[in-house]
Length: 193
Image (cartoon, rainbow, N blue to C red; front, side, top):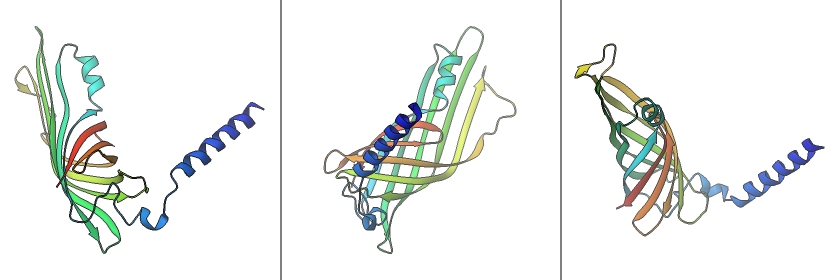
């Protein structure tokens, strides 16, 4: 009996959830959301809570840790009047400093490269949803007592997928939330030009 009630509740929530986001299938994959259009440029700056934050805070109490800060610029490019893409570049980094009587640690991770996003229009005013990829390189420095850690690569390929959504606050300002490796959640201010 409990299973039937649970199944009924899940079914009702599913139907309510899908009908709440009913949208036009013709424009869903062919137009930008949030009033964005071909040729618009977006500059974003924000901070992310990355996957390293929790292990670093728990491993090195009292350390100074600046979570990942990132900037990006992208241009809306409507390919063939059908595919709402944006292309651009990104750059950012984080920092850890931990000094004790026993050891001095310094870590920085700098990432930069190109990005591409595909935008979806859920027919919700002021909302732009996207999925994308980033590819570039990263540069890591790990120092312990002013010496580079052994068996550590300085340069690596940086590539990852991401999903996110932007909410238009004013004519030229959007608030963006994004998730994708290496961060769990990034919160950004996005300026349209």
